[in-house]
Length: 303
Image 1: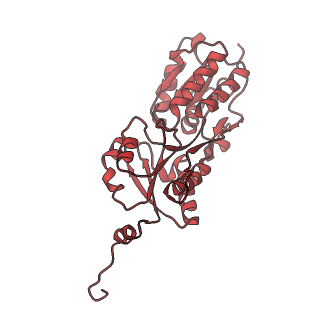
Image 2: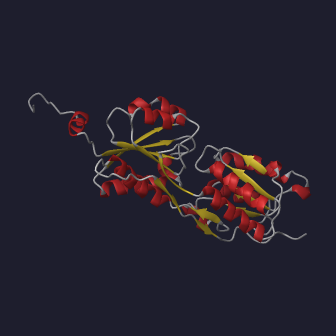
Image 3: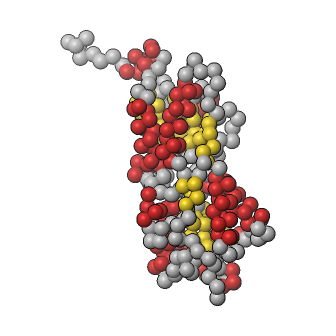
């Protein structure tokens, strides 16, 4: 074989053993490079690290949208990987039904599956959003804006629901003029803030709850550019607790997601699904989020 420069196919060897010891990780590149993204990066790092500890290699598969990911399913459903980890998938796409039809074993992370029998690892996004909104209400804020990312993105729809529930429990009507669904790109922030700040004075928000930290930090920077003080003139809350949140000016009040734990549990849950000797399979987990109160929120400004 050496004389003929023949190299046995790794895929063929794996299929003969019925196991490749290779975990596939699928994610979208819609907004930014995931490896350096402050949300995706820590999850991906921990998936790779946990995989190495458990003698698993890792392969990344990525396309710009989940529609394209689903359309290219033959690339990662050909037997080259033992199972798949889907990071924050668009649940309105056909990816779940396609993988189930192909008989692939997979887990979802940073998103809660709607399908029975699908393993997902997430936080209680609605409960976390209620906690954040109640914090602003306790500070005297009554005109609170919500600037979410795309509602298909990780937990965003549930965060809007939690925001709405907290207002309802406080007897405050839900005001559509104070709620904006924008792209998760920070480029959308200036136009969105302009719309909020051009409302009649008695309708303008005294606090803004952003759907993630990147939007919130961009919001603080733009508010300061406009000459507004945070939190003296307007309070700001984010979501995720990315690394920059604690060192921003002012430090950002936010919800901390256990991003590294997402990665670790994704790998161990998938390996449980792949182990035919384990009778009771993992059904996933709802991990605890932590509310981090910092200096970007304060009492409502009194005129």
